[in-house]
Length: 149
Image (cartoon, rainbow, N blue to C red):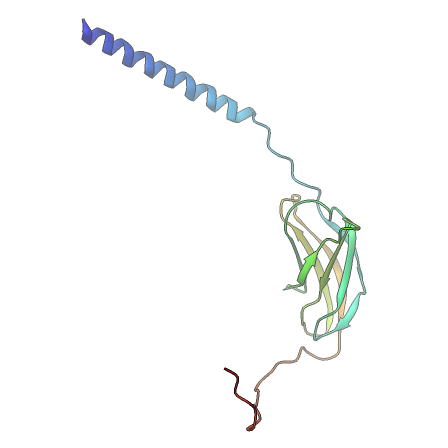
């Protein structure tokens, strides 16, 4: 007699488990997914030129720049320094240009969680002037320099 109750109890739990699996599978199929932010569409870079050594503070303006997550800006494939959204205008990004060889480069703005796509490009949006970026080949310390501990 006890064995029958155990078998019926086990069968009941198997049925409950099967129903839960079916319901959860159906529920997952209808759960709404959070919408991505707007696609970034940068339109201008001011100023649009600077020295090959980098260090120019630029303002990038356009649409879709205010939402989403982390910002990455590249100039000719080289990552910009400290891209931020100023509190006064979410439609702009301010950053500092990295060093790059002279010439016109694409400016690409990528915002995590935007899009798809999650990036926008200003073709030939910034022109580096002058020669190539300086490279420190050797540093000579003066013989009478103090030693700091």
